[in-house]
Length: 322
Image (cartoon, rainbow, N blue to C red; front, side):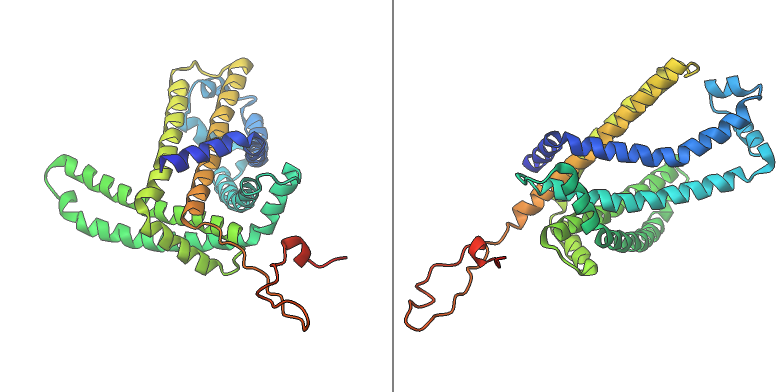
């Protein structure tokens, strides 16, 4: 388990271009909704006496007043923007995963890095989108059923006169939902890894097989993912500690510093994600070694040696000429 995790971290370190490209892509995607929103916010705040207060802290009253600015449905617009952002994130994730697996699996290939990334992203895009839809449907159904079951099982605890019992019941429901949801997300990762490796076409079959693979090896699959999640949580805690104790970003210098720190956190998150994919891919390779190619069959020709005595054709000689 730790060997696979170390292998994943080394894979991320060996491919700094991949980490930088993914970070840059996510930054550009974030700027698409952010720039129009900032432009609107600037127009609303330019002549507001509460602009100085907004730089110091978030004010719900001010947010309510801004919702009446130019009589537009601000919260509806934000909702549609978030939904659009989620859709774009899902599609970009499918493309990025295809490119990542192509780069990680192309050790020693002479083709340029960008060629390999975009080749993998385009080649597996629709298959990975279908896998994502299958995983999302399974996740929603199973997590919903499990949540109802756990809720029914913890009802006596929630109705207890002991005050902390209600919080414990809610915490138990949350933990179970997270663990079950993580199972389906891990299966999605392994399904993508297998499709990229084997070139399968049936996405439902690939996802079911990956789900069985994870269920049979729960301890190792979770054991690879949990340290990455812990490192990610530590990164977020460090960022929140800075955000809590740093002075308000009321100057351009402070705003630029905050932006750079935020992007450093995003870069770290991308690095950890590539590390996780690399570790999962290495684990899958260990559990399913690549089968040796079968020797090419050469029919016997009258007056020549038998097929069993003839040497097998090499990959070069077996390929068509011209």
